[in-house]
Image (cartoon, rainbow, N blue to C red; front, side):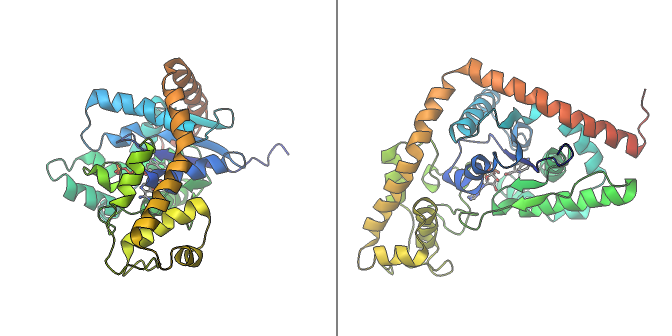
Length: 334
Ligand code: ATP
Ligand code: LTN
């Protein structure tokens, strides 16, 4: 049917570092799974990355690497629209309008703002504060129905809904209220060196994360060195045994074995056997992605073509929504 449009998905990832296993499990892996069922738009959130100081040449290189990694992880440019956030100006344009409809108190409550302000006390900039309004614009400018993200983004999504709802009430129904798509398994993969914190690509300690393009030996070494407890039993208990439980979550994602099955498999064995098994499993799963990534990254023309095409398609959709919003809020049009 003409008017029964497929539900639409939008998600993004910052090129603030190489992608971690957390990014893959919590987000990108699901993007690939969902692209056939939904009309999907995936973007590299390069403007969001500017909320933390970046080295310009590195940001430029990482943006292309990010696109290559998304493709390597299985995003098919014939099925999904892949683009860079800065290539579709309507996002930033809408974000101003949404900023004017987001309250200071609401933005102040964002835990990511509080965490990043604490991490970079010398650069608590306006962009860091209004970050969620730009993220809301990313989503609302396409009327996305579903947003596949990790658990850490639920608060930002909730804010997008609040702002959309406020706008709809003030100016008549305009925006779809987006729902989060957060899988139970792997919604929050923890740091390998401090399992009380989430694994994060901008962590200064490289042993805290596994990168999607780490080689096999590095992956196994990082798993072996992962911080665990001294109790010696492979058993799922997030509160008492966060390190082991985190490794069990990772193992569960790739083997589909339940926590009980994993505990049974390693009953009577030491942590080193378990850690080795986790390392090998992760390395096996990432190895084809790694090869594909290397192949795609070498072809700059191919990546640029996809990004150009993606930006064009996305802009067409986004500009339509932007005009509607400009009209509704009373901006004078020629
Ligand atoms: P940064 O360290 O720069 O903040 P990040 O690693 O937190 O980066 P983002 O670009 O902010 O990554 O997030 C991209 C996607 O990956 C988001 O959907 C986010 O929820 C998800 N994600 C990030 N870290 C994890 C994690 N440890 N576990 C599960 N999902 C994650
Ligand atoms: N803030 C997100 C990245 C992001 C995003 C989005 C995710 C930017 N815009 C729109 C989903 C939808 C993060 O993961 N830190």
